[in-house]
Structures are given as C-alpha cells and as structure tokens.
Length: 422
Image (cartoon, rainbow, N blue to C red; front, side, top):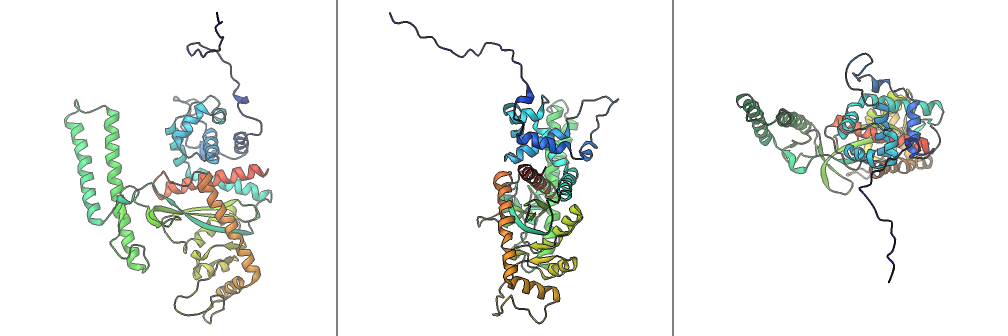
C-alpha cells in the first residue's frame, strides 16, 4: 500500500502572534530614510502653524506633517500621485509602513494636506535651493526654461457658451434652493444629516463653478477682442463647467484638449529645478519675466544666462532681461513675408535686441543654446513619466500650481540625495 504524502498546507484559521520591528522594514540607505533625514534638517514651522491640537487643550492629536510630507515626496518619487493609493500602500508596502511608524492615515487627510500646504511647500522648496546654494552646489549661472501642457481634469464636452452657462446657472441655483426647501419642510423624510449635507455641498459647488465659468468667459471675451491671434477667435468663446480655469490647448501628441501650461526653469549645471509656474495660457511668449521674478524671489539671485525655445520670443521681455543683466538665448523666427535673415541686426533694433541677434549668430551662442533641450526637456519628461505629472487630477490653477510644486520638490530632493548633496 502506497504511503500518503506529507505536505505543509496553509492553515488560515491559525492565529499567530507576531512581533515586528518597524525600523528594520527597510535598509539603512533606503530613499524613504534619506527623505526623512533631509526633512529633519529643514525648518517646517509653516506646516505646524495651522495645527489646532495643542498641549493643555482637548481634542485628538494631529498627524505629524513631517510624516505626511515624507509620504507624498516618497510617493511622487515612485510615480504615485493618488491619495487613495498612498493610503493602500501604507498598509501593504514596507517603505510606507516605515514612514508611518504605526500611525494610521486615510486618503482624506493626505489629500487635504497636499492642497492646503501651498505656501509652506513653496517655502520648503526655497529652503532646499538655499541649502544647495550655500554649499555652492547650485551656482545659478545658466538656467533653461521650458513649458509642458498637461491634460486638465475636465472633458471637452464641459465647455459651454454663454447662453448655455446662464441656463446652467439658473438650474443650479434652483436645484440648491429646492434641496434647502425640502430639508426644511420635510425633515423626517430627508436622508441622514451627512448625506443631506453632501448633497447641498455638491449643489453649491456646482453653482459656484458655473458662476466662475461665466466670469472666465467674460475675461476670455475681453482677451479675444484685444488679441488678434486668440485661439478661439473664429467662434464664440466657451468655458468649462468642470474646471472653469482650464483652457483648450494643443498637446504634445498633436491633439487639442483641456489643459494647463506648466513652466519649469532648471539650472543647467546641477539640473535642479529653480522655478515652477502654472498658467492657462497656451503660448509661452509672456512666461519669461514671471519666471525670472520667481527665481529672484526664491534664491535672492539672478541668473546670468536664460535659455528658452522660439516660443518665448518677446522683444520687450528680452530688453527687460538685459536691464537685469540676464543674457537670453532664444532662436529668432524667420519673417513670414520678407526674406530677411533673422540673425542680422536690423536698423530699428535696440541695443539689447542687437546683442541678442549677435549672440545667437555666434558659434558660442549656438553651442550654449544646445544645452536647453538636454536640460529643460529631459526634466519635463522625467516629471511627466516618473513623478506622476502626466495628468492633473485637481482643478483650478491654484491647486495645479501646488501639484506642480510637489513634483518639482520631489525631483529636487531625489536628485540631491542620489548625488550625495543632501
């Protein structure tokens, strides 16, 4: 008679008492530890100021902002940009469990922290740049700027004309009034207070978005009247009821979709991002001066050279840059009508524009300009491919800027850590 085999079979009903050392979940040189160590050396008082839980007062303890910062920065370094996904990973992934250190966290706390920490996050990014400049790792001699259009959290069908928006606004106000009236007249038949509050909040937000869309529509109409090359000059302007500040732009794949124009300025030597902007303008010609203002505000210094592609061609901006002592490297455009060499100095050129033409005509200037694509475009590709900036999930230009700043800060930290600078 053949003997029965002996097997180790799973017994899922067996209760196990397991001791776990959270500090041993990840190695000593793990990126999560590195981010935590960097944040320990930063001044984070701006993140702690809004916390209402204080010693001697009642209430639940607040979640440590340093922990939330590390979760988001490490998540973005791994391409995770969803609060719900980070909440799941805090239970399933060793690195996220090490960051939490036994503290529970939910997606709502993570999401609120990301969108409500804009000013503190901007200050933290400036701190990181200040540390790198103090160590002379960031010299800020030459910066390269490039924009990337990122798809917004709005559909093309959400764009409505003025007549339709006015009707939607009337219906939204009527719906909001009906909900309030039903809650007052029939309190027993209404759902729970939480459900009712959610319904009224959704109706109120919808009415506010339609109102904002009407305001944006008026601004777009005024811009269309002033700008001959307005993207919607051939038809009636439209605004989105989902994200009123989004605009239809031409994307990198050649198609048109609601999007935002994210601008990044990068130091060509260290490849550290030194400026972040978000705009709903589909063109880059007005983005040079605001970026220079931001770099000066962040670093208290002005770069000597500024590289930008042909889309930033703006003589007024070039002259203003020359007054600041900044040499702009941007290729000129061929005139559509006249056969004029754009690199030759023209009779009406100011001294700043004449210097710019000579600069771009020289072999040295062309060699310097070649660094733009190798710096700015690769950084933008990294942000969109690896830092979760390929699609925007939040609405409004303020929140879009916060999301872009998160990605830029995560990029700077990981580059500085990998290079051994921080």
